Length: 321
Image (cartoon, rainbow, N blue to C red; front, side):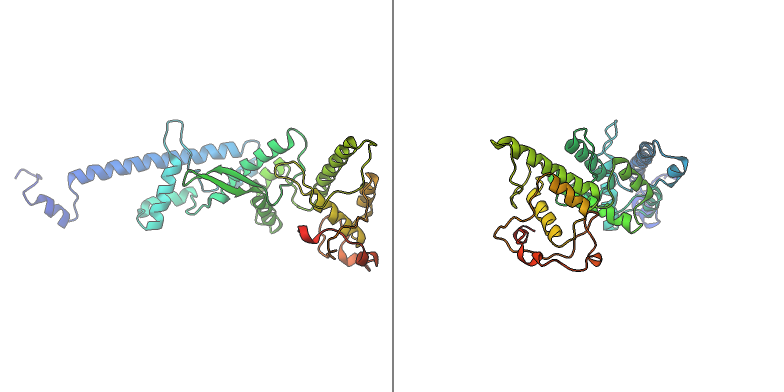
């Protein structure tokens, strides 16, 4: 045999002594080369993301910036490299225990998260919030809130089918994190930039509902021959918005708070100024609530007693909450 050349038993011997056949070496080298290329693409993606997300930030804010550890499954580079799918393959290999140690170390060094729920992809949900604001306000000021039950439909990241995500709950989750001091500063800055109100029961929320009431009154007066409104909103009435706003329930709630002396005087005056009637008798059970939360309500601890009228006025709430 020539020097260093293979012998009839060389293949078996190379395996026995820990050496790899040349064809296998070539294949492994090519595989590693492809992996290295995709890793470089990941690093570039993170850098591009950093530049985009820190634009307009102060130097201190840029230093605190942290990548959220995810790449959308559908993400491809301009050259066609499917980085999102490659990342999912790395996560899958990690879960199966087949990801090489050195590769895992390199991926961890970038800040990659091994488990990212599709409904919790923060940047994607932030973009959905931006879309919501654009479509709902049409250039008008946003009231800083998203209804808790507001859902969106997006293309599924794993099965290609439409998926339903609850944007309202995601927004409430950000509020909870903020209240507990666990929301990242850069994320708070992004939400502040959009005008998110950190209290779901803030004045602007009441103002938003009041605006719906004003519009309802305007339409009713326009449709009435005498240009009048009867001072009531049916408990079942919902607006034509997408999603619809349950204005009837909100009005009933204001009446309930008023009867129990929980509605602040300034809000009482505003509702009376548009002609709202407090006593509307409908065949529903009155609910004595003690959980009115919001700037428009008087804390229960500051209410000495509930007036007798609260036991007699029937406010239509029970069947619609």
